[in-house]
Figure (cartoon, rainbow, N blue to C red):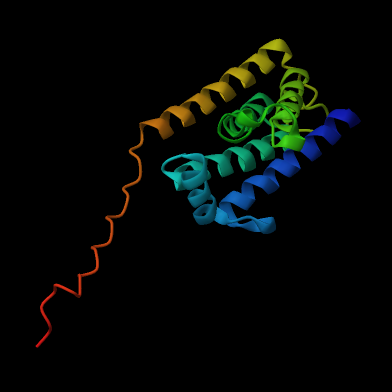
Length: 181
């Protein structure tokens, strides 16, 4: 048994499953697709918000499940990396590196952990077994994750801005308006 990799898979995969199901179903104190979609669209300018919430939730829950089970580990890692790169781009980059300032430090640690598993393999016990992927596994995970994040960014940028509701009609001027009969 590869205890370190097994523990890393349990922690990384388990927390991502939880984080994804917060977005998808509102579990564990999450806001579900509707609430997360509104946040994504309104605060992060990811349009349409519900589509991005679904993609992020599926990427986190699905990628977390693959990592936890040690199945197609580079693909699971790629899904996690893609969501973390998007989070860095849309939320954390402007705050600098330190998590205490809302920065991207933690996201980079999660990406590094996913890359380690993509390179070394999940260890045993796992569905993939004691397979190692080497540098190719890590490179595949990183490239696919970056492509997914770039695709999410490009898709959001291609969507039209939400329509602003028309301004309310001005109230009638009672001094010059004719009296109602």
